[in-house]
Image: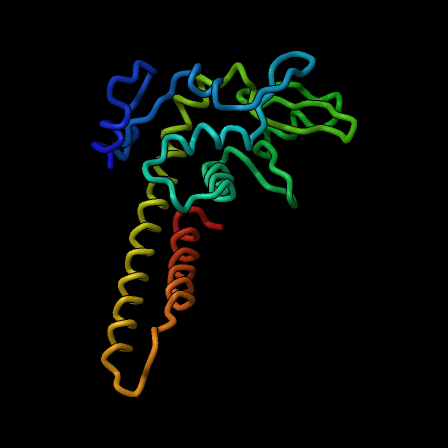
Length: 202
C-alpha cells in the first residue's frame, strides 16, 4: 500500500511524512487549509471537527468503505475527542477548561465558538500544523487498516457468493439464477461490524 501511495503522490511538492505503517501522507498546513472549512471567531479561526475528515480521507488509498462516523470513532479511540449524546467535544480535561462563556477560547489544538444556540467546539485553525504532524499519521494508519480489511472481507463474501451460484447451477432441482446478493451483503456486514469494533471500538 505504501508503494502505491508513494506513486500516487510522486512529484508532489507538499510537505510529506511516512506514517508508522508506511503510508506516505501530506502534513503541510497549506494542503489542509485548502480542504477544510474555517470560520472566524472572536479571537481566531475555527475548524469544525467534521471538516478535518475532508483532509484525512484524501490520504486513504482506494477509499470505498470508510465513513465520517468511522473517522469520529478513530478520534475518540486516540483520545482526541469525547462524545456526549450526538455531540463531539474535546477531551474531558480540556473541555472543563473551555466550557461556559467564561471558559478559555483556545486550549492546545482546540477552539470554541459562541453562537446563538450556545457553544460549539472545533480545532484551532492556526494549530493545523501540530494536528497534522502529531495526529494525522496515527489517524490515517488506523483508518487505512480498516479500509484494507474491509476490502478483503468484501472479496471473501463475494467469493462465497460465487460458490453459491456455482452450487445452484449444478443442482438439477433448481432453476433460474441464484439470488445471492442479500446473502453476500449480510456476510459482509457481519465482517464489517467485527472489523470496525476491533480497530475502532464502535
